[in-house]
Amino acid sequence: MNTEIISVNIQKGGCAKSSTVQILGEILGKLYNKKVLCIDTDPQCNLTTISGIELEDCAEHNLYTLLNGNSTLEECIVKATYYDVIPGSVWLSNADIAFNKIGKEQMLKEAIEGAEYDYILIDTPPALGLLNIMSLTASTKLLIPTECSYLSMVGLEQLFQTIESVKKYTNPNLELLGILMVKYSARTNLNAAIYDALNKMAAEANTMVFEAKIRETVKVREAQSQMQPLIEWAPSCSAMEDYKALVKEILPTLK
Image 1: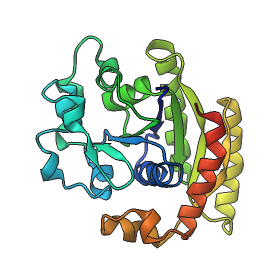
Image 2: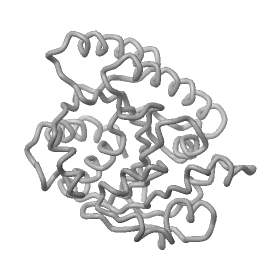
Image 3: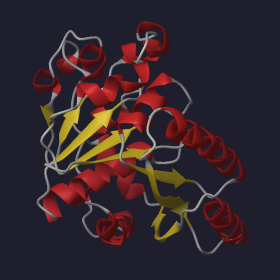
Image 4: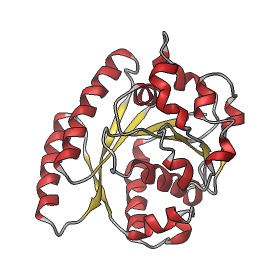
């Protein structure tokens, strides 16, 4: 099976990485009948929680125990409603020390080899470290969500530098899908200015800003607080419609 592995990554918090992985997983799983695995590499384990998985239920088998060899891939996979999950663990906060050995950048790639899925989506921590490098090394594609803010643009610049290092040393085939604007409002002058600046940054990085832009809505937080899929909680809300548009935009570029 030709699995497309997509990291959702930016070195800043609050840019909807977990929500993007969750909702893309729901759309691909339910509307496109694809087999999807979502991997939570963030020690905060937000993706795990919003997928309806209790952390105490996966304390024995999770991404940390998979990487340290105490669990098999099959033991770590938990079924959510529309996709499977490899749960995160608070112990991942110790990853830079725990996995400090030769070949550490390849550990996630090796751990998920043989996983039979159409798509593997990776949620990443909001800071540069080993878990981020592992994720980028394991991925075939990279999607970058960003807020319409100056600080997000700084995080984007840092990520571009990381991407170049990863392509040079650990994953020369990594492809940048594009930049996704989240929490977007066309009514503010700042968003319009940031959009223009992002387009210039994207051009310099040989990528694009997606036409689809994710509008902010309370429906996402409502669904997540109830640990319910957004595609069931509010199937016609603005965010769901925007993510559907994103999927239509990126599918032609995937395997």
